[in-house]
Length: 230
Image (tube, rainbow, N blue to C red; front, side, top):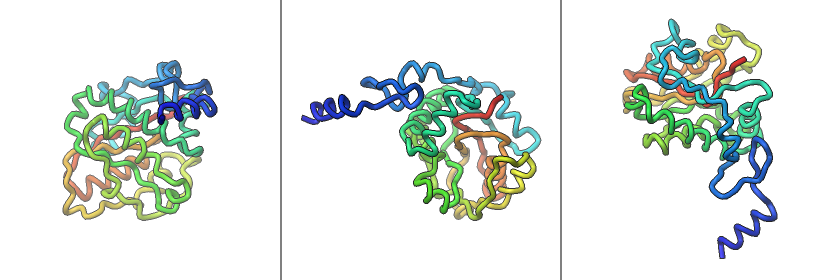
């Protein structure tokens, strides 16, 4: 009976690919197979000289940093991220996180990561949006990497101005004191994977990493769903 009802509902209200708008078929989630195969993957994960990792050289002793996709204006990734962040399409964030993790688990640099920590939003912003997009990505990754995702370890304790039109130094100054570790004396993990949606200058991730280094003995790696790329 459930199969029959689902079939009727799918006929009347078909699920559509969030990238191209075509109907999804059985086994597809959020995007169709064609669009999934068209995603602009970076293939950065085994290259310690990749442009994301190099962003942190001389700034923070990050173990490894990578991004899954290239984010270009008017491209497929921008379209998907807009649906994810502003239209409530959480499935696409979780699914892309799953695809991302499937690549990371094959890389030695991420083999001893023991926790995923999403970059926190300020509680007011998270309440307004209804969810933290980084936590949704982390949830998708955690299932594949078989490690926990923890949203209670790194806290955002201050509000910040929008980062959109700020340069790197101004972005870092804007976020450098707004994060805190919850009970740092009982921090139970050795290799943290900080997760966020899109990286531009890396200022927010740097501020989070510096707070972890200051308050714990953990190593820090970074994984973002996309990297802004012209």
